[in-house]
Image (tube, rainbow, N blue to C red; front, side, top):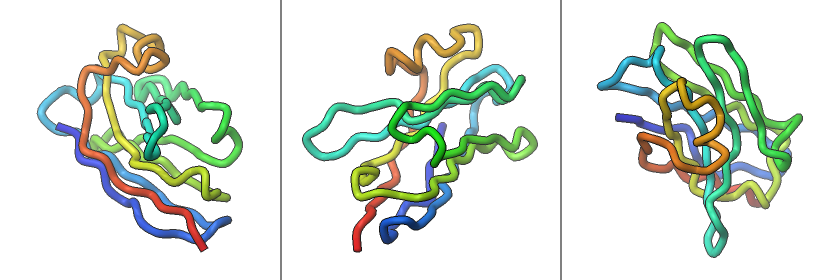
Length: 124
């Protein structure tokens, strides 16, 4: 099970930190990704992390503004979002995939487990 939280309403230029708590499976055997979907748009991969070696990946729209991290002791993955823009407005989802797949399934959007989304709205 994946439980995402931390969404909300923020002004342009502001920051939010999303959290994703994993339970019911071995955290150290999975990589994690954040996805988002805005109304009328396709779901897109935002960021990915392998908590075992700390490797990360970011989609082009968020590079330099977002940072993904993990706290393995707490089975939690974070997404720090800075310099938020109105176009970042979306429902954000946390997902996991077995580490053996590497980043491949994240790129394809074909993860093993999905959590419910948390809404992020960037507006003045």
